[in-house]
Image (tube, rainbow, N blue to C red; front, top):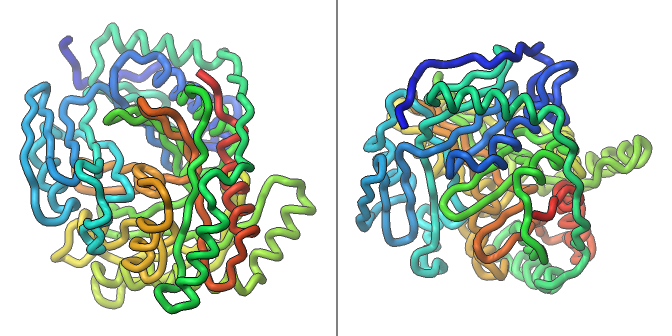
Length: 453
């Protein structure tokens, strides 16, 4: 098929308030979540990544080029011409170089990096099985973008553009999908026992904090785009995503950034640590918020996470440019509320955006403190490889600006089945019952909205 680089505006005009609202629906405007779910569910363009950031939704599909990295091999696909080679060094540097070899031609790259990507920077490669998937990025032929300017299509043929127009229009009247009940209360992975073990290691001085997670296997195949549409209506994410790439489907409602590097080279991370339930009524939510903001265990957990994030940004930033803002604000994220802070600095002239990723990944709020010892504990105590869970969905612009959003509050599906996953931060004051309850609170951001295929 021939393509065109002309941007075609589809016949919708939207008020700025109609984009990226709390439930994904604009007041009097386009239901962007429904539109994106319809594009993904139509299965027209093969692999895709849908990414929502404040004020903008992008559906990127039909890769012109791809980069796939595992623990042993780098594979590159340039318009159907596939090559593979061994690699050495750090995976962030390898991806940076590989993307430079793809036919970007002014296009943004999209994809994901898995939790195990961190093993090289943190001297934990001994934990990885052979051929562990680390990253999968692609450069799309087609982008469908929804923002305050309306709906724009780039890279599509005229016929494809018309079909996209019709599909988005039809999505606005499509019925809301129905969820299938999911049981999240069973402790199939012995989570409470693992919390006891971690608390013992913390009290022995091996580390200060570790995030332990548990996996909930789903007994049926999932309609991932429909689950995204339903879940987005009930979540308040910092970012959201929907993807099918590298044999993996996922949809999620990210509570925080791992790292963003803007065009002006400002590096930002948003550590969240400290959790209480949300959405149980105004009185209960206010009481939980007050308890969260005054609980010594939660305050200590948050403070040490902010301190670690500050140190990591300072390591790649211009001296004296690192600052903390919104310290210990409370942010609502679906079924939970968190203590949250923002840390920023200006990337040093001798550093690249991918070096900032390498320093800040994985998020301190999804690994542990000190990070190296925490990651070691995750590999030992978390039962299953994490993969995309607590990894990141990544976008890289033609200018080099980069954004990596933390993958939590998500549903995952591969040829082996579908699952959910959630964790909690374990410190010396942790109790198994409360940490298990916290995983249930986080799973409740996704579990009630799973649509059976």
